[in-house]
Amino acid sequence: MTVGSRIVALGHYQPSRIVTNNDLANIVDTNDGWIRDRVGIAERRIADQESVADMATFAAEKALANSGLTPADIDMVVVATCSSIDRCPNVATRVAAKLGIPAPAAFDLNTACSGFSYALATADHAVGAGASRNALVIGAEKLSDVTDWTDRTTAVLFGDGAGAAVVTAVPDGEQPGIGPVLWGSAPDKGDVLRIEGWQPYIKQEGQIVFRWATTALAPFAIEACERAGVKPSDLAAFIPHQANTRIIDGIVKRLGLGPDVVIAKDLVESGNTSAASVPLALSKLIERREVPSGAPVLLFGFGGGLTYAGQVVRCP
Image (cartoon, rainbow, N blue to C red; front, side, top):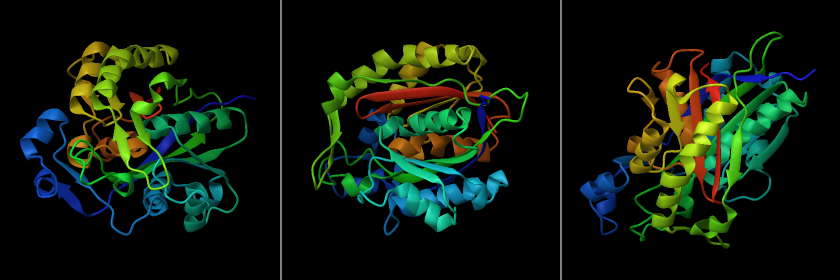
């Protein structure tokens, strides 16, 4: 019998080292006012010794502790990342080994900044098909490894961190807590945001990405709400990918969200953390109890590929 799934707990992790805009002004030709005006970022966290797998594990450990489940209960680990330096073993198996999860299905998924919503949908589909019962879904990035710190157009944007969710099957008779995914891509624009080669740096055509994000994405976010049977006006919170405050404000305006809807803007203190940004922001909102349990929240990621994905979830 097909069943639905829900998020029962979240957790997040960020490195301790804070790099402010003024710190960056000592490295590249920029300043605090320019960065705040253009993208809205004030500071970001940068990892030193922590790997993508380390940060993913720390976030997953917190989510697992918050869920009340044990490592033995987990039968699937999905990690969304585009910045893991190691190709094999994948991040998911390393997380499983560190947490003592005995024999899960374990794989990584790369759709860059939309990765968490893709991974969440994949886990939801696995639960619905009976292939999983309890899954760990993680977004983790160490973008500092692929950032050119001499490039003023990209060095100011990115940070490191991880967010994780525990997804479980809903009990019989209970409504699913994860709505249908709306996902897709604009592959003809795939080369405008890229991490290519053996020693890669992030490169992007910022204006093209900005125009695409501010003009093309709002209808997809609205359709994600429609698939869940929820109106944008019914939302308690909107958790978009944390790329740029002007992009977020533009999407919010086109969605017609009311003043009571919580809009995540974790990028102010975290920067753009790609696949980690949505779960990181959601975990913080829940930790601060800014969104009530059971309330509908729209998650919406977008970025490299160019890819996008979103779904309405019920807050744990």
